Amino acid sequence: MPIPTRAAVVESGGAPFALNDVVLDDPGPHEAVVRMVAAGLCHTDLSVASGGLPFPLPGVLGHEGAGVVEAVGPAVTGVAPGDHVVLSFTSCGGCRDCRGGHPAYCAAWLPLNLIGGRRADGTSTLSRAGEPLGGHFFGQSSFAERALADERSLVKVDPDVPLESLAPLGCGVLTGVGAVWNVLNPTTGSTLVVLGAGAVGLSAVMAAALTPATTVIAVDRVGERLALARELGATHTIDAAEEDLGEALAEITGGRGADGVVETTGNVGVLRQGVDALAARGTLVVVGAPPFGTEVALDVNGLLGGKRIVGLTLGDAETQTFVPALVRLVKEERLPLHRLISSYPFADIDQAVRDMRAGKAVKPVLVF
Image (tube, rainbow, N blue to C red; front, top):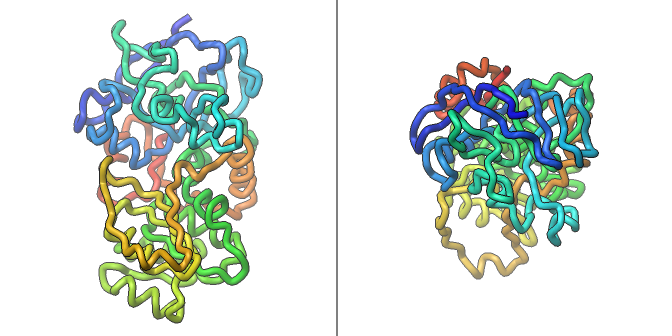
């Protein structure tokens, strides 16, 4: 039977989030109803809400959910009512990349997660006053008191860990940690550079601090975030508002350059500086996403020393194994996510958006 709930609806590109009464569809065979406890706010949500991505509006966003399963479809086997879950992206489960353990590169990733707004069969997961809304965002649309989520979006987690502290794992933390662990995989004595000290960048810093890398450099233009980066494991920081990035990196690395760079800003000028700062055989991971169609100019000869540039989606993580490992690290206080989180009541979602845009909050988390 359809389930009434309350959700934050964006009417059109540039419109604010407004709480509305909506109705969830009946769960499909591989879907579950989740009572939301918390949901992280991510820059991707803001990009869609501003009209920067072609998601069907009016609609319900949210893709860093955490909650408790209330009901499941008849074919669901991975979770049961009462389970605590973190919600992440969805995937088809049957394509070559899904079968190979790389669901973030699912052949149907874009329509299933980012721009489709519907299930794979074209039906809507939620409606308002009888009219379908854009939903199924990352298989969840978690800016709602209850969400109808794909089973492949759900990861069962330890119920002893507060869900408010786990919501960011579904996207931002997954991405930053995965950039370091799954792509750069630093060896003993490596030098890593993280460009941008937002939620993704600081997650990369925390991940780097758990590896054999001995030099971890955080770069930003906000002094408070650089101070936090040092507390979370950065050995050096560079204030790009006051220092020349290339010169500062050359001084810290003795002119050799960086073995690995994580670019989170989405600024192509910063990306180019990161590529130029790579050591021979170094790798830059592109995480930050500028508008579609953005191009960057590179010195081709500068790449011939074995430099690699790798694009990344959601940390290239297989969530069913990766997320529980992160939860354990949070529980054991080895991944101090609470240092990034600012909590807001769900009704204050627009204040959370304003604080995030103003740089006052690293990772806003809505609490239901």
